[in-house]
Length: 145
Image 1 (cartoon, rainbow, N blue to C red):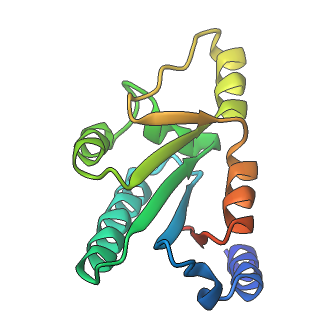
Image 2 (cartoon, rainbow, N blue to C red):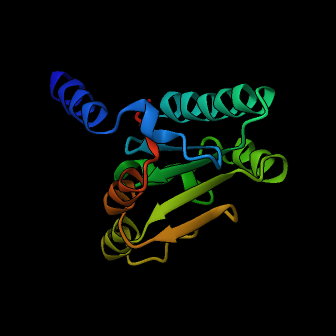
């Protein structure tokens, strides 16, 4: 846990909050890599809260929830404990996207011999970790609930 805190502190030092506002709104990346329903629900709560806060201020906000490793279960049809919430968010919130790691999907397929079927709201990215790096390089705020 200390290691995570140190990594987060280092990342925050590299990306000052002032650099996150680009005139086009706020951009926030949420990171989910654990198969924990409480964490998944916390993440979705945070997504709603961040959206409500900035919308109340008249500031557009764009959010991407990036999943990989065990966290990919958040976006797997028949396994996701938050599938209903994601479906509702998909209908109500056009500012939110859900990214699924292709590397994790391929590893799951190798292990089970079955295709990984994602929720309709999910999009596939080549690598969840690389996606988070790319978003941070573009000035997105990084949140690990």
